[in-house]
Image (spheres, rainbow, N blue to C red):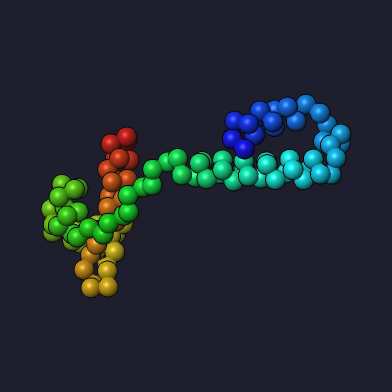
Length: 109
């Protein structure tokens, strides 16, 4: 059954009371509505493009994005403010998404 047929059928069936339907008609209606709901859910969840994966940036890359000095950003008190963290290699890294969010927020203030 085509989705437009389901929609028109649901509009027609919305007029009579559910009490007026036989058990077999209720079962059929439920199956059709469940299939329509599953299709709608899939379309709603996939209609937005997925966000790009976040990348870990080095201290030098973060300095370029933020436009500050390496010495200043290299201090823990400063890199911690921008979402910096020590990676497994013990080097300071930054979430690209966190830096971009900071820049956007700074531009709006």
